[in-house]
Image (cartoon, rainbow over all chains, first blue to last red; front, side, top):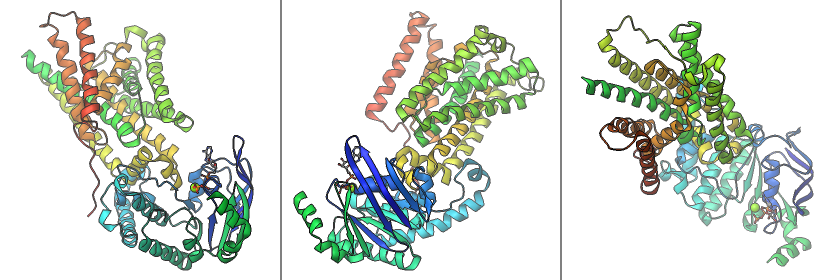
Length: 251
Length: 299
Ligand SMILES: Nc1ncnc2c1ncn2[C@@H]1O[C@H](COP(=O)(O)OP(=O)(O)OP(=O)(O)O)[C@@H](O)[C@H]1O
Ligand SMILES: [Mg+2]
């Protein structure tokens, strides 16, 4: 589904991504771990088109996507969330969900003015879907609250809700469970696994919690100082000398 | 009854500026586009419609429509640099575009008669309306335009299109990550705003029947900003109320000049100072303006 070849990204003299190659297969859940500042978020930013790469190639569903703007990449079915959640201040939780909905009508002035009955119908369908998702994310109570007023954990949940509304083929999640309470965290993991099984979506997840990683990931990549230092199943990774060293020296 | 005439004049000017404030609010309050060149739409609308009628003998309806279209196209042109400029730098660029439009009107005398302006702009439907009733007729015409624009803009802001615009205003990167072509959305927003501004310009030209570059100085943009700061952004009622407050003050003090022992120059300066102070007071004590943006609630 996603293939990254020899990806390079430099910030001045800092090599944030140094010859990184990796692969996320169709309907798999892959983890990305590494110490703080190892380049994980940078990798997502380059893949999703927010940063320009300095070298290498990115393929999604066999098609080359590096160099495309972020919105084009998202439209192709590769979506992401942000480590620091983005929450439009003066838009309610429900508006956020509807904003993200896939295939909306009325997104340009012409259809907004002249196709109102059809727009309203599609809005209704999206609204039902949004309410269902909010229920799962335990955000129903807050549906009419401004997203800007949510807590950090709630914003994380909302960003998950939004990407689910988009129905992408592959989802990049940047620390989706940071700041989310443990019970809900387990439920989120469950939801992600469900989506992967039922809708055959691929996930690429940055996580610091080893528990989460070993719970749901089929495969894990490890970054350190912008370099890929290991890959394998969660069990293999946990025994890997180099990985342990990277984490210990960082701590 | 000069006082009645004055009130009708005042209301008509409030109406015309309400349209400009609504258009500006659509850009600033809904899309987050900081436009300091709003007067450009006003100027293009006024000149296009009046020149088409005076010099080319085009029917007024057609002239209005062409003026709105041209102003919309100018909105499109203004939106192009948003691609490469950050919003604060874009704001500076808009200030320049407002001045460029005025300077073209001032210097391209072959087309615009330069500083002399366009004179003899005819009254619309003059033969059908009794002379005494004409000011009221025109006021009603302006009000009808306001109602139409209000409905039209509200329909847009309440649609998925309007939701996208709000998301650009609040969190543009999020919008991109959700697959929205934010550049195209801004462009569409500017076209809509330009069209409304062009309508206001046309209404203005055919009301006062004489326009010159003097009418379209940057200070006009300043007044429109004052309106949305005082009235409140993110809703059109606020824009209208802001236009009422600011125009009431701006126009009425012009006539007060006759009774105050100050030269007209110092009166003008004093007027702007007071509006400036008003803006500062609002920003400090009521930054959301008189009318707050309404939350969209689903049940
Ligand atoms: N826009 C930027 N400009 C300059 N340097 C940057 C930029 N973004 C990231 N970096 C640098 O690149 C390196 C990798 O950062 P990145 O955010 O990818 O780390 P990370 O692995 O996501 O860390 P964390 O686990 O703390 O989120 C860091 O040294 C960071 O300072
Ligand atoms: Mg990170």
